[in-house]
Length: 501
Image (tube, rainbow, N blue to C red; front, side, top):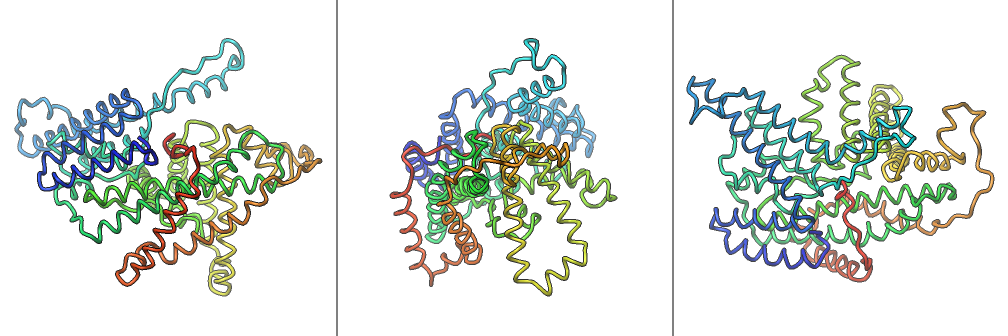
């Protein structure tokens, strides 16, 4: 079910009404929210529910098995019939992770694996090539798989007790506000709030409604109105004017940001009205002054997940230089492949790795200290502009349908026919001869406005408007956003972009 549909509007009204009538009846409320969440997800495709049931079942059982084994090692007695404690905790965790990752790999990476095999074999471009399979990617599988896995890992680490109630655990996995596109919620946070619900006061309603309205504004007004421009630039017209390709890549950066941040704003707002407070997932990342700061603000629930469950277990920064950079590479390679099963997503992930390493090395130089002390203001502005353009150079890999178009577009950014020509030396580089007229130059002012919007709200943040003395400003802001949604929302609203991941 899409947040922007009328179906969701009526679903939300019914769910929030019944949910608040049941607020003091703990068990019925949890069962009601679980059934509502399953209905919410089943609307996309009822068969998707089978995968959710499978993922939920084996992580629920694995966590109980880990605790049963821990109890056996502590007391020497097998709990119950001893079946659950017969495997070691590590084995239970390995089985859980294998099943989770196998399910994700089959649905998301099978065809990419076939493509790699065909590209490797000499028969790959003949009639003997392996055909791609007709596999439909379940909505949100990357999100709920990582969320469910983190629960089992936390139980294994002793940071969390296994949940005995299957209803409680299933609700954690499927809770509808964040099920299909995050944020990835940690079990420690969710169960703490489930057991000790946050009050839903007038101030909490103000916070929740503000987030919801802000989310719809970001999605329907800002992101969706960039969609025609982005689709036009990335529709295979690699012979566009270089200015148009720069505008298109910059526009896509804003589009995917406002689209995804809008979704998580709505998710956090809806969850708050049910008594749950999810961590912020986007903290004005395009106002960051360097790539490290940017990634501490962008898709925070994913980057912290990869930090805690991949980077630190690999040794983090507590290793030698070679291992350190290998660890960083693994994390960014995983980030790229998590987003999509294609070469161009891998390239995008590697590009993030390159930027992070360059910034890390630059941070160790005397030049950085000079720029940050003697030229603090001018360098602060320049650093943000430079970062923004490097990010959007990478966004071409992210948005282009394949590597061939991506490298063509990236080459034309700099006035050459194809970026790949550089690999063969300067003599092989072909400059653009017939420069077409720009089609999208009028969008430049809209992109400048978006950056001003980002910098303003990075300075003010919504917390400023929630203060009692600023409620008048909040009413004006929300009214303006609602009016703009009604006036500027596109007739055919595209799905949220992160549904495909």
